[in-house]
Length: 159
Image 1 (cartoon, helix red, strand yellow):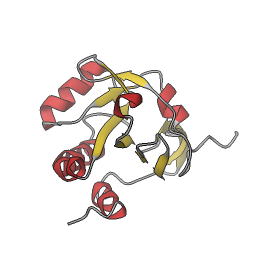
Image 2 (tube, helix red, strand yellow):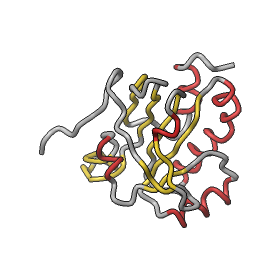
Image 3 (cartoon, rainbow, N blue to C red):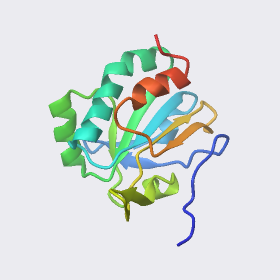
Image 4 (cartoon, rainbow, N blue to C red):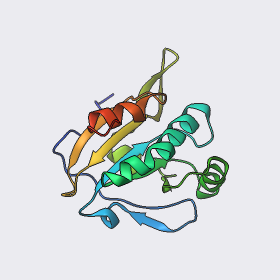
């Protein structure tokens, strides 16, 4: 097995255009000139992913106020994302990457350990993209619980 591609600080963020929970297309380039937090998660509606999404929702005013936009990406269909958005009152775009193309380009899909076994799947990951389109932070294998609070500290936004 070859080592999967991972992004590092300073790399150019791979561009993408994906449908959101309403089916509208959202591109990374839509946010050119802004800071963007792009996070990848395995499945809408699961306990860990719900906790992480709600933490982003609850910290969104703080992030937006500091000039950061948030995008969540998973392999879920837009219809499933729409139910998740509605059920949890999410106020930031969730994007569908059913083909796992963007997940793979960002190093967020591949081999991972799950209960001691090596499986193929989504690697919970978070990236901060700077206004110049370059990766400012690349974090792989993040925990669902407590991750957003740590990210706020890493970005010097914690209150």
